[in-house]
Amino acid sequence: MYEKMNIQWFPGHMTKAQRMIEENLKMVDAVCELLDARIPRASRNPDIDRLAGDKPRLIILNRIDLADPAITARWKRYYEAKGFAVLETDAKSGKGVGGFAPAVRRLLAEKLRDYESKGQVGRTLRVMILGIPNVGKSTFINKVAGRKAAIAGDRPGVTRGKQWINIDSGLDLLDTPGILWPRFDSQEVGEMLAITNAIKADVLDKETLGANFMLRLREMYPKAIEERYKFAPDPDMNGFELLEQAAKKRGFLVSKGEYDIERMANTLLGEYHEGKLGRLSLEAPND
Image (cartoon, rainbow, N blue to C red; front, side, top):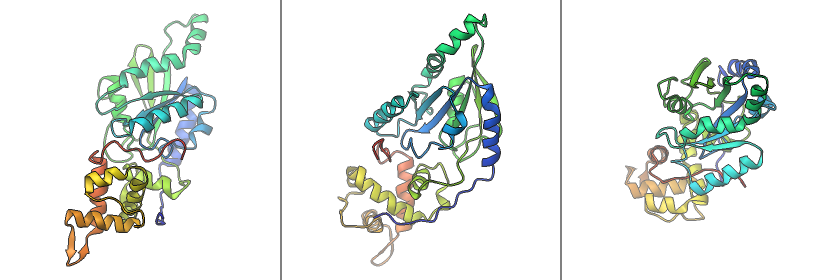
């Protein structure tokens, strides 16, 4: 049973960023959403469907190097069935990034034909790129542009204002600030964003977050616990007991017979960020 947590997350710049997106949508031909391949539903701003209206959409599943490849393939099929174009990438290494411009041109083939019929051959396509903070948007843009065009950082919300970035002779990208929505649909969404570092885990209780993450791992990847922390997760243990068991195996002793579960929670989250637990997705399309 997952432990309850109080999650408060009201980013001050959210309303301003959303207004900016609404104002600039009329200037673009398509909308591109960058999602974390480990949490494609939780990392997707639910307001985008309303904001983007009927604009053609490209979904980029980024960080595929950290996600479970079998589950990523299912997410690709899921979004394609909803009518989106889908591209899989790992912006850090550049894998899949070369497919971006061709994917945009395929998505907008009809619009390009329409431009050509009006004698506007070679007219530049304009695409707005959206994504929550720390999903790798700036790194992706820099790789696509082949230069340092966007400010990249590993802390949430580095990008501030909007900026136009030329990708090639016929394609311009409108970068936007990474925005989160002011209210999460569920504790689960907030937790997954904290586990993947999209929001600072400090806004939550680390021990509870670690305990609930252990339960998720036991449910989806019990082998990862076994291989990394050297014990088979007991189905009757709660999340804190699983954390304590891992702390015991690591020798994280506070005093005789008492184990440091806060340190273990930090270790668990850190090792997940570093990919030491393997390629693990935290949600699947049929959840």
